[in-house]
Image (cartoon, rainbow, N blue to C red):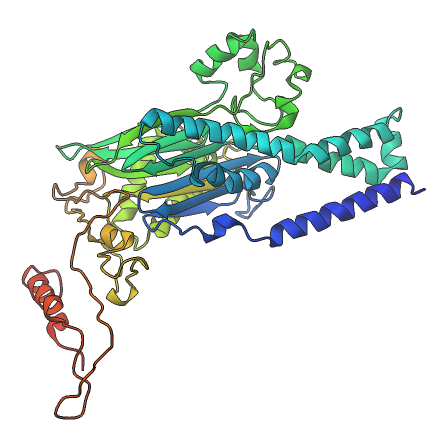
Length: 493
C-alpha cells in the first residue's frame, strides 16, 4: 500500500499532466476573428524599489478578449483574477460559449438579451464550481491525512502533503471580476461583477465630450451593495471596518468558493441569511450606437486605481478619456492607443513613488493592468492603409470595405490641440460618419472578374481584364481635395 508521501506525489504528477494537456488544447475561441475596431494594452503587476528597479509579485492574472462573431455581433471582455489564474482562464474561455453559441438567436428585445447575459454569468460560475469538484474532494482527503497534527508537526512529518494542501486551497479560492460588452444589432449591452469598469465616451451636437460609467463598482464602499448586504442581516459598519473577505475586496465575483461556500466561517459575513458574495451581474442596455458614440473602454481596477493613488483624484474616468483622445491623434493602431495609455499611467504611478519622500512611500506597488479600447467614431489619422491589405468577405465578392477600413475613413478634427480640459481640447468634426457593428455599402466597390477567354492584343500581350477607371477617378478627386499627393496620379512603371 503506497505511503501518504507517494500518494501526494502521484496526485501532483496527475495534476501536472492534466495542466499540460489543458494548456496544449486548442480552444474554439482561438478561431473567433478578432474585432479590428478594438485594441488592448496591458502591464503586469509590479513592486517598486528605491533604486528604480521593479519586480512582479505574481503571475499576470488579467485576461481579455475582443471578438467579431459576425457582422451584427461583437463581444468583448476584461477579467481581473485573484489568487491565481484558474478562475480567469476558465471564465474567459466559457463566457463566449454562454453567449455566442445560439443563445442570442431571435433575441430582438433588450430585456431578452439582458436575461441571456444574466444567465451566462450564473452558468459560468456554476460550471466553474463543477470543474473544481475533484479539488474539493482532494482538499478534504488531505485534511484527513493531517488530522490530529499540529501545524509544525505536519510540516516536519509530511511537508509534501502540507504543500499540496496549500496549493489546492489556493486554487479553490481563485476568483475573478468580469466586465463584458456585447454589441448586437447596433445596440450596446454591458454586464459586470466586481470592480472592473466600462466607460462610454460620447459627443453631443455642440462637440462637447460626455463620459458615462456603465458598470457598477461592486465593493464595500458602494452604498447600493451595502444596502443589499444589510437586507441579508449583515452589520454595515462592521463591513466597512473589515471589508476584505476571502482575499478579495469585491461584493460580487465569479468563483472564490471559499467565500461562496463557506461564508459562515468569515466573521464579518457569518450572520448573513443568504450568500452575500454573488455572481449576479449588473446589466445595462441596449444603448443605441449612433454618431454620438466615440469609443468604449473596458478596464481592470489596477488601471484606474493606479491613477487614483498616484494623482490623489477621484475623477479618474475623465483623465483616462482625455489620455485616450490624445493617443487617437498620435498612434497608428488601436493596440497602440491602448498600450500608450497604459504605459503613461504606469509611468505616472512609478514617478509618484520615486518622487515621494515620505516613509513609507506611497505607490509602492500596483496590480495587473488591462485596458480595452473599442472605437465607434474615432479614427486614427496616422494609420497607414494599404489597398493591397484590404480583406473581403469570403461569402461575397462585392463586399465593399472591411471594418478596419471603415474605421480609418472616419474624420478627426484635431486643429485645436492645445492641452486643457476634455471638453476644450479635442474637437471633432460634425461630419464624422456613424459607424456601427454592421458596415453597410459605403465606398467604392471592388469587383473581381474571372480569368476566362483572355485574348491577346496586337503586341501578343494579355489585354487588361481589370477596369481601373473608377479608381483613377477617385484618386484624382482625392488629389483635388488635398487628400493625396501628386505621386498618386503617376501610374506605376
